[in-house]
Length: 217
Length: 223
Image (tube, rainbow over all chains, first blue to last red; front, side, top):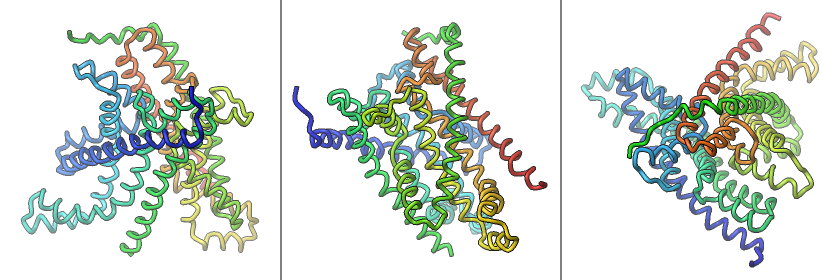
């Protein structure tokens, strides 16, 4: 058995942190795409679709992320899909992210005045054109700060993926702790690394918030 | 080889789920009361003119808000004993929830306090109210009323987040679920049912907080 120096701990955690970043990015991008699709079909306004999306959001906001990951991890094999922790974590976090983002963006789209829709309809635009040229460009500006802010929640959410056995930063921390018996140091380092990923995002979100508020004024 | 669902396999173990729900509720209620109390103190410190205390609270808030709850929990449960602080699973889970909610509610309540117009405070001063009276009646209550929906959402998030406390063997609802699926190997069925229980609990909690908000802020008006 070799001894772990502080550098060994930090180095191994950094290697694992790559997976945290990769999982966060994947879940955020895929979740954004699904969220955008949900937003589109919801805004188009079929009452059944609206009800479905509302239920979808309620389901993912009203249950623990850990349960969502468990259900994906243990549920997908039942329909014949053999899933690795990576696939289960990506899939679960994508659904989780999409539910939150679609809800955030719904608020932004609704904040675009009714008159904008009516004016563009009177110009003979169809739904896609209205969305593309009138509503989304305006909604996007309001949407960016809270979206960046939510990315912090996604990064923190990836820690839960350690519980289904995906080796990212938190799981690596547990494994190194089991080898070194130095939980204070290891989890301290783990926390610092999450902070280094999340804090810049938080600051950026705050900066954008201030910037867009000034524009609105 | 189609899988046959067997939700009946959970029934013999229903007591574990009830016990888990009771512990989750205990954690949430105590955590929410103490955590929001901590948040009120934190918000007061942030809004006060003592820069050192305000900055210390600011660092606390940012540290907690930018690290995962699971890591905070591990740090408290596995890391603190190195400093001589030994906690039981329940105490560690509760402490983590309090510290976590304390940081978020500091920020939420502070936003409410900042939204109180300066004129209100000046009016209270001209009525010769002292600082504590002003903070309590003119600043805190209207601020809490304004941010109550955001605070309620955060409390629900903390309740749902408590499911990871099963990882340090705090015997809450998810722990019960893990235990049952280890006995009967019906993982999907157990987690499906427990997800439903969490959903019901979060809906009930949100309703309860709404009623509490009405009670706290609407009736006070007439006093």
